Length: 511
Image (cartoon, rainbow, N blue to C red):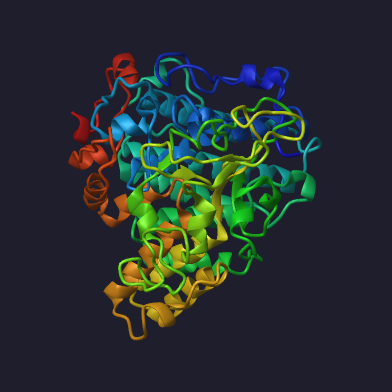
């Protein structure tokens, strides 16, 4: 089934609701009547997946604290028009460690870590007669994968945070923070251990659980961020043999019709009609496409014309009709004035947003067949990792190793899906390493826009300040982004955590 169903008593057994360090434990379980059989193990593993559906993680929001699907607002791709959600205030330097955005994200990540730690500690208690060794190993692989995902977010966004790998008692919960290097090493360790334990695929009824490809892909993402380019090549060597392919239709991939595509390596699953599961990243308003996630003009202008040339040089570009003759991905991702954005109401976008553009990718266009409105919780899966990203990660690593031939082939493969010209036809042959680097970085932007990865890319490339310059040049009314060095590339430890634990100190950039 699409939603991982969690029985209420399992949630009650697992600490989940308050701050990481101001209560007895994130992970204490009553084990007297649990961890008896395979069903208990499955319920517990589902409890970890359930955390991924938190609003501040992958459910996202329409009028509340931002989730990861909205993280392109931490970049030059989007404007977080509802600044109180987090990204808008962050970009305008109007935020501090006491802001609830940071504490909610922190708490959710540690909730997931706590549930994973509890599983890893207790699954061995299940008698061998009640679960096969192979099944136990597979479930252990999933818990390791999920813990790695949670710690990857902590390492990437907060940089320094406590590394907790066991169920804690109250005295044990007062801990110091660990370095980025220590968090990162644990992510790699968990993923490396998980990879041989996980299957390549599951039966259709179990679609959505972490696979070998998912663990390899998140490992490659970690390696790329750490500039371990040879590691990316070695890891993706395995991924390329697992049967993933590009979806024939780019627009379809980001709809419910595309949720079982062979392009998807890992997604967080939702089902609109099974329960109110809080999925709102695909929600929109009736008067305009999402006001809180607005495409920026500089992103729109960065999409090439169909001849593979920028709008500044292509003879196909017409400023009076800017959507004509453009990369098909632009039309799949962005609403222009006059586009119908609610098909059931035949309602056109009037350009009534701060940037004059609307988000189209992932966004619902009509009420569900059961009558659920477009602004109510929906059932769109969020793709955490897909094959096009894998190809472009590999291409980037190859460029940095100055192996340009295969990198060019990979970019061409991604472009061919949307019938865009090859690198040779558009940019020419015999490109330098620097020129090919620009090609790959451009391709990542236009292919992966609105998937929550732009901040990750800009930070990795050391290009965040340039992004702030591009934002300023767009002159969006009411939006004054202010670059603050390391404060614009990292999150602070929440003030609530510092107040609760005198062993914690604030991260350097935010002191």
